[in-house]
Length: 156
Image (cartoon, rainbow, N blue to C red; front, side, top):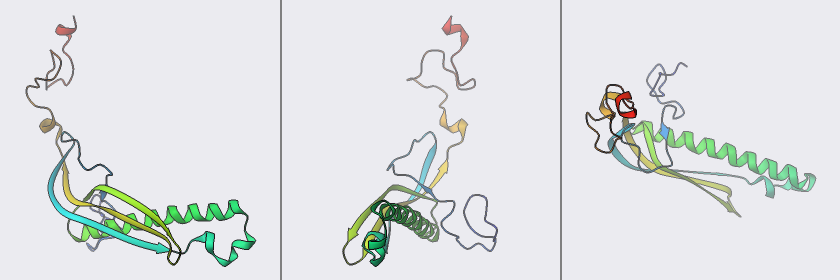
């Protein structure tokens, strides 16, 4: 099915795999680039999968192959939990996750467990004309908004 250009929805409007959701490990964003419109709250996701290192076939694998299988499992679980979290974020009407973290646990009974958390938000990009103030007291002398660079008269 076709996906929308920005919001990650399919042609019929349903959310598909959390695409279009921006995920940041940062808890704050550069205000000259993004504006936080709404903070919806914390979102979390949990996924568990068998640990390849503790499967019965372990005896027939080399330690390197077992480790490669475990690393591949970590990679797949990380992608899966991000997609699931993205779906949740879209369902509550947001387009961004701030403060995203992942924690992996190796548990005897459950195998590999991954927990992902973050804060669901609605953000928008700041237009370039809104990002640069008319006068910037912290800018170097000769800074002008319309040119976005130092004027040659000051540089000499």
